[in-house]
Image 1: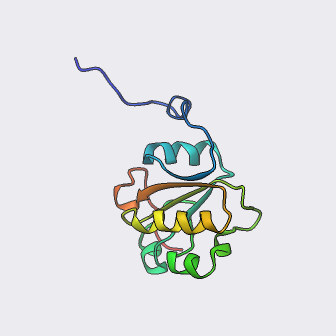
Image 2: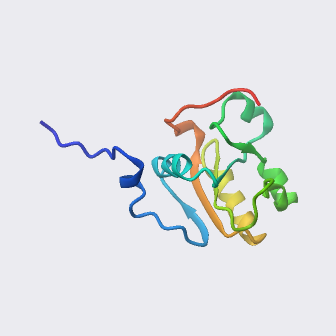
Length: 128
């Protein structure tokens, strides 16, 4: 038989994860484990509202990249501050990484880009 290399629980998956300042790219399985383990993390979908309603990750807030570029503080969600860790995604990963850099320049501390929703394997919600 072939050995299994899959990680079965979030504790194992997050064992090497350390919250650190700056912009970071993380794997989607790590992002999913973070979302399940730390509900205080913010989840931003930086796609357009039209893309968002077609399918998004449950719990995501839609703050389009164009809004973030004009007004980065729009990503400051109610009850959150600049120290809140933010997980970002878009369709393919380009816009979310750009948004993370804009937010870093605006003073946000912990930014984690996990790429595009097109490869997300943990389910999507439709509608607003």
